[in-house]
Amino acid sequence: MSYPGYPPTGYPPFPGYPPAGQESSFPPAGQYPYPSGFPPMGGGAYPPAPSGGYPGAGGYPTPGGYPAPGGYPGTLNPGGAPAYPGGQGFGAPPSGAGFSGYPQPPAQSYGGGPAQVPVPGGFPGGQMPSQYPGGQAPYPSQTCMPMCMPGACGGQKRISASLELELQMVRLFWQESNRHEFAIVSEALTAGSCRQWFRRPAAMTQGTQGTIRPASNFDAMRDAEILRKAMKGFGTDEQAIVDVVSSRSNDQRQQIKAAFKTMYGKDLIKDLKSELSGNMEELILALFMPPTYYDAWSLRKAMQGAGTQERVLIEILCTRTNQEIRDIVRCYQLEFGRDLEQDIRSDTSGHFERLLVSMSQGNRDESQRVNHQMAQEDAQRLYQAGEGRLGTDESCFNMILATRSFPQLRATMEAYSRMANRDLLSSVSREFSGYVESGLKTILQCALSRPAFFAERLYYSMKGAGTDDSTLVRIVVTRSEIDLVQIKQMFTHMYQKTLSTMIASDTSGDYRKLLLAIVGQ
Image 1 (cartoon, helix red, strand yellow):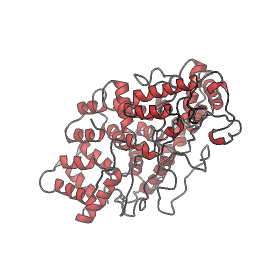
Image 2 (cartoon, one colour):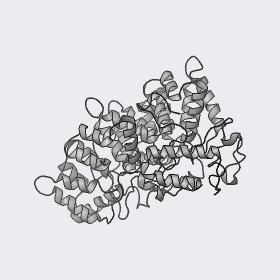
Image 3 (cartoon, rainbow, N blue to C red):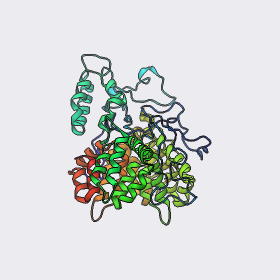
Image 4 (spheres, rainbow, N blue to C red):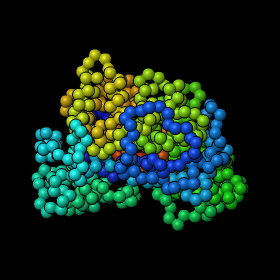
């Protein structure tokens, strides 16, 4: 089912969207170490974080610490971040692997398998499954959709008509959005191995996510020498800088930073800042920041001084997964000596404040199972809290949208549309306004498709007079190793023009060259 009004040309239809393997995920807890003695996470939150961890999460390569003492520009006095980090190069990495950035994480599978064909009763074949796949008993009062339909994964040669329809729907989606993998998926589904395909290890899917991948035959000292020559003497060889920076992963850039200081006794970031200016400087510095630090720095900058950049807070806190939010909270405290939740409370108010505080807990359910009975109940509760009453019960919307998994929210949106004859996004627009409306809609849009949400943000950063360069830089940099390939595909689908074409017409000079090198033609 498509949802009218967003985006301009519509998301791909339900069911089965987005496909497994096409959403981003972030590293699991315990793989991004911080110095001992760090204050515990503050504040109670709902629901309790599952103790068993979340499935399908990848991890940062084991670094030598985050960050090394004296690495970032030192713990700032309460008051905030500099215009750009200076000092020691905001995180000169320890020897070894350094920081990983967003290291082509394993895709977070929303829905766990091929699209299910709804039939009366809400389950394939009209029967409610008695247990989860693999024989695990369901939780009390929950009945969930099985991962695959009978026969699809059991190697049977003959398949039912309903399964054949399901496979056709999955093939149609993949043919539309990922033509380069359509043949592989079609073959896997036809062979009755859909469970194996949709549970493929991350290494088999991560190559299609980001536009930037780690360079082969990487030599940090050679790259440091190239950058030194590009900045030595009169003038700057910007093209050499573009060639190196745009073809290295964030982890490799951290190693280049360390090699530069070792070889020349100088800080690479200071040298780059002295040679560059404007949007080119902002883009280069963003590329050299470790990703978690970049998010924390962006949040601090958005709340520093007079006024607040609320859309930056929404973009980061409402789109990141649990582990990344927890890492951001720790980094924010460590680098800026401030509590993120307290800064949110002091810079925002009302229901918008409550939504952001909920998001900053990093406690969203990340299970891939869908409870259709709960979806019906949540849809009814949301209707009674909004369209079905005079006034709005904002707390009900906050509770459901802040705690339910994205697959569960998609099921709730479908149930709401059937019940209210109006999609949930439209109801949110009717019941809310301002930044709380934007925050709630961002959550729902990401539940439908995170790449489509970022595609829309990129489009409006360049649409009309002027360009919101900070938003353009932030999204291109933070998604370049995660899902920029999918964002580009969605951008073309939604706006009938390529992302690179719009960037080329809206930017200029070396700034344009570097953006296009990252995005790809």
